[in-house]
Image 1 (spheres, one colour):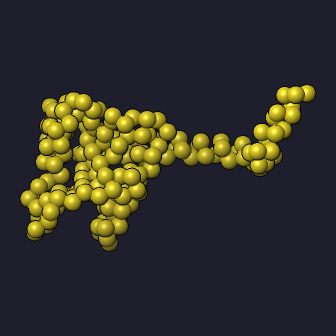
Image 2: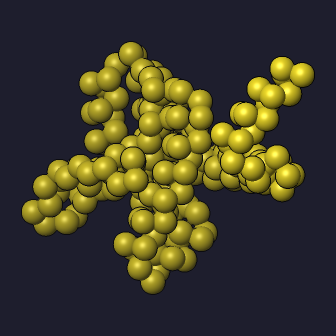
Image 3: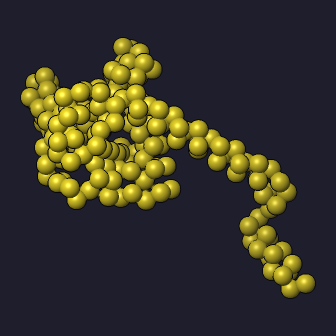
Length: 173
């Protein structure tokens, strides 16, 4: 895993859910399932890239909703308070972070992209994020295939301590 602790990716949760066909279709049956699937996808992405992911779901029209933050599968998940959009939360957080960290925001909202750029962040559209995630998944699949190929060899099936002993014995010869 690469280490990019100083890099953050804010994801406008509902914007991404509505932009990705599979998540949009899932949300028609269960919004909760779509949110959980997005969290799962972004958890894998974070684990592989080392980029800290914060998913923001707005509760703008949810009466009495408090600002709620939780960690799910290593992902920071934020539910904004009543009358606060995900965009506003992200902008406010960007202002607090300043330019100390590299910040990217995933949204297809053009106006939000312009605001993010103006505040020193970078933007990635929902489509671009999907392509990046698909690329990461392909890379993981290739690495797993390579690792499995190695493990299919006899040496990959041996106990690591035995392999170490054999290697020492080989070097003494």
